[in-house]
Image (cartoon, rainbow, N blue to C red; front, side, top):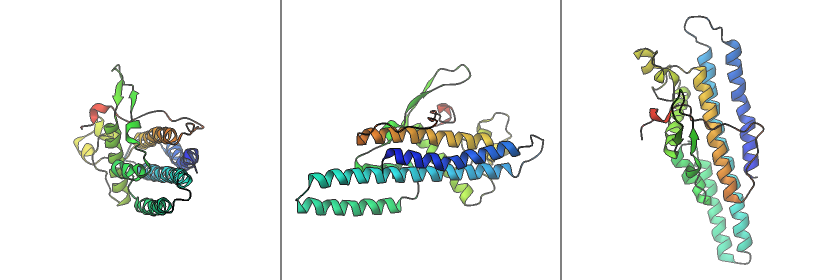
Length: 239
């Protein structure tokens, strides 16, 4: 297993998100009135996107583990104590992997740093400011904030909440045309589902490139390389 394998698995999983977005676009009537079916499709898209992100991190962790074990056991050939230590390290790593259930930044770092890789420094890029504004620098803390917010949305959906926590990542919350009631209890729009998918694809791309570099592998290839998109202007996030 390598990073390319993790990327391929992730790409296959995310096709279901693309399909759900396509279903929404095809089903949307464009007529007036409150929609009931489409928000459910959007909810499913977000849940699948977060699940695919979690599975990707687990695949990366397995790749890091396997490479670390191969190198260490090769270097420790004939050294009984080092081999025993590596066996224990593998047991501890696998236990941490088994317990990994919430793909939030702290837990991701804790898991992957067991094999010497910290993805956080790789979560940065330049992004267009939009509407005549200058480009902005997306920093790791911006990415962390957005991950936490999508995890919160996933939590609300998984627990069957009728409305979603009011968060800056949601278009209704940022939309100046939205009513105070809608801002306080937003529903998921197609734009939100699309932003979620694009965001996690961007972070997966950067995480995969960093992991490949860590392992001395070539950067993974993509059928359609993801663009780097946060989903909102950094000014909407508070440190």
